[in-house]
Image 1 (cartoon, protein in one colour):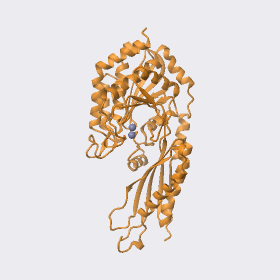
Image 2 (cartoon, protein in one colour; image 1 turned 135 degrees about the vertical axis):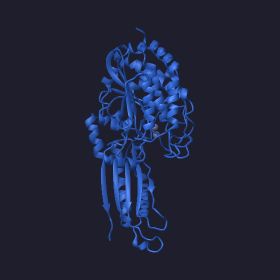
Image 3 (cartoon, helix red, strand yellow; image 1 turned 180 degrees about the vertical axis):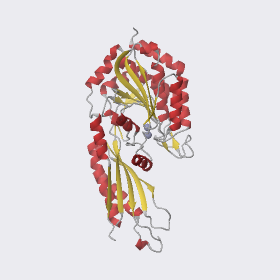
Image 4 (cartoon, rainbow, N blue to C red; image 1 turned 90 degrees about the vertical axis):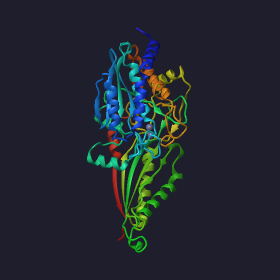
Length: 441
Ligand SMILES: [Zn+2]
Ligand SMILES: [Zn+2]
């Protein structure tokens, strides 16, 4: 039997011979970006790539998700490597879809590439005969929590329950048999690899202020101005910022998605979307109560009605320290890497972190721009696709080599924060619709 280090070298050679498939797939996905739960072209590209390798694919999981599994010669733990399918609307991005403005401004296209690289590196009898366990590669829909109004409509129609793809896949049982989950995310203004740190969770809100239209010049006294209600609500949220405790990392960042119809009419309907982010569920719940008060205050001030839809968002992210140590060791043999601190962003990888050991490291190779902006472009595919895939493959070799002793140790030392049923219960408790009417006639 080879040693783990010999296997890593072997897997690297295999990947180097086949890496074009992973790089080409990433670039192909970049060229036709799609937003969450609409990633049909992206799905087809991945299906074709997996099919070309002769793999069985479970398709159309949570609409656009895909999963394939390879098996070590001996039974053992089940590790998942994840890639996210979606882009987000970023008008002006050089690779945007001109019709939808979807763009891979968060680099998810390279996640699919580095997931495929890991698959290519491991999917060989020379490697698999030394491993005990299974490895699933799961392409997940809808990580970017955007287009909330559209997703809420789809949710009301029953197309899906949760707005995040991993959440929906958990509900559908796709992660029931998975013991450990890992993925590598792109990062701008960054070189090499980053690991660890924590991330904010969130609840999402879709808000409608209902007023009464009237002629804006002639009869404003007959109207109820929904835009004024929204403005007061936004000011009230700002007035609460000093009450947010620094360590809770609260971020509330509303946008107006409809601000009125025509300028010569008092705005009757104004809609907002916002997140309430924070470092713990408790902190998010507390800030969310304050935001709800602010929304009511806006409606109350002008005698409008407000409908507050609160939607379950993402759980805060943290990493399993034992799993991370194995990954970090693989990085340190080859790369300078840095441990990250707390990040204000959110991902539904945080949801999985409450159910099983996970890591969600970052890889550089993109421009200096912030993610979610038109300037965010991945430039170094060797690093972001091939090397990132290699680091995951090495980690899996460590986990599943030697009778999977390291994977078993990671799993036995991990205390999941929630069971699946507890998780689904918390998610559903976040879901709420409130209608408050302050019209005094
Ligand atoms: Zn993103
Ligand atoms: Zn992302």
